[in-house]
Image (spheres, rainbow, N blue to C red):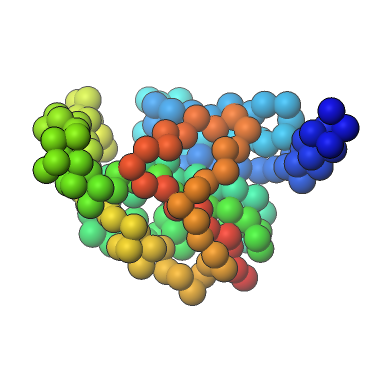
Length: 186
């Protein structure tokens, strides 16, 4: 138990009282737990009841004041290059070494799965076009694969990336088609 306890205690000290933004929280808000991570759910749609109603490309936070930024199934809701402001703003508010996590459908893997009969047409098209629930914001307007997402994110701003995102306390991220975790370079 001693080794496990020390690892958990060390991780807990590293993450204690970290500020994290869930930009585009929509119907999936994150919750602060154990005072380790203070989640601020940000959305431009007031009816989702986010903690902060604002456009994610213009955040009311100082430069280098945030530890984590999560874009969980957000970028696909913007047209070609329209989500660039979100990434620029995430880079601005993140501390050096802070983490940006991006979750989007991987159109290449979805297409392969659909063509090989491993996923249904419904699942494929829902990921391509979005799950429309009466609001224009529900629609998907762009798709990514691993290479195009990394190119779009702008490698020069990030020191490393991985397709294995850490599970942050209180986050409820769907680890499905494609994820990208990048460490902020300043």
